[in-house]
Length: 212
Image: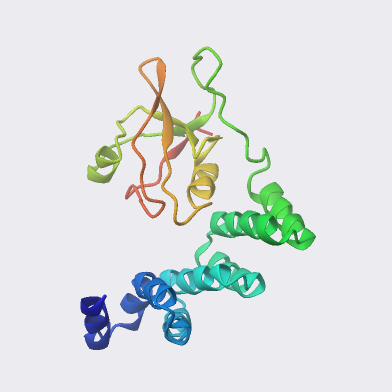
């Protein structure tokens, strides 16, 4: 932590600091220094960098300031288009506080962005070739490191069914701190790949299967 603080003291790029502030904010909070944690969270969020906004949102959620965290997740959605993170937050907030407004907003966002809803991926049925999913149409280093190959069809993530690329991105970002596991169709069978951090990106957009 000391080397991290030294780096922050010397670094002049506020956006870079914001995007790497989460560790130190958590450190201050765990150490019983809430004022320092909030001061750094405010500094990070003021840049409007996605990592900075998210770091402050996590701090407020941890302190059960759900309204404040909601405001920050809304800003992330508006600026960066991350509706999955907002939906994931609303689900956690609803469980923690039983606020019907959170439940209503979550359902509205799901209807608007995932009309079929969050459907569990059925792994008990006899394997049948998927009719919908996300096609890996080309490869690069990031694709290969994720365990994917050209021709794979991604059919699930986080235990939910993936029907298109938009659904995949939304489900991936539901939990910003939890890794995700993809389920793919390859060679006539379903396979679960290794867990990846929610921040993992492929360097390319995958395409809907079948192509529209």
